[in-house]
Length: 274
Image (cartoon, rainbow, N blue to C red):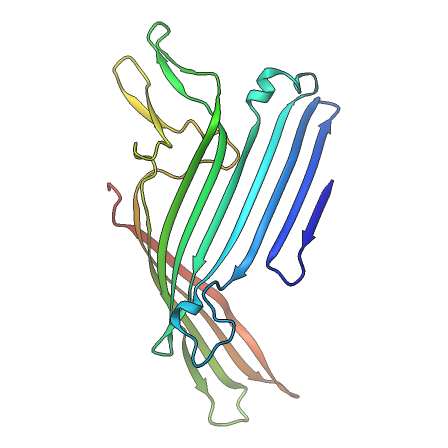
């Protein structure tokens, strides 16, 4: 069962659905109750309604917003209303806000800064503890409440396009022209280490009798996961290219793509341990 709504003349849209999937052979039952998505399309919050003169740099800043809510259960038919099934329910609310701008520098270079913010609302956490008697790690009963799990990152990239063209001097030649297009790009991206204790998204637990510990997140089993661990400051780079030719036939001149697109890319994290 699905419902959707778009508000004409506005950037707002809403969609909802409820679903049940049942397998009579395995008695597996999957219930989504419900999924809700609310979106605000890309807009420019600082753009003047009545612009006079040239567009200012801050008017190029755009942003959008998306919110998701989900609540799902997977169980056997006879266990659908059991306490264990309810404890294993996956639910949560997620908000994402990307902010972006694009600037032309020296007429040929495009600079694109980005800031992304994501926040999850969770209502359950499952902690672990070391049992000295059994010498094992035990999973505790779910704890219910309200927790905000968030993360953010920032990046900036630059790209341009370079063209190289060969044109035959004699029009009667079969090969009339060759065009080589190169698109290089380079960028930097930063993301903090959200496994640090001050955020509270991860915990530590003893794992064996030698006193070793592991880091885990008690929010992993929720609907939208958790932010990644490890601080990152990445250099990204790439180069894509295409090659096409104009070839004369009996009746006309047609374009032939010799290389549709071939690309190479890589990244390097300056903050990695090794």
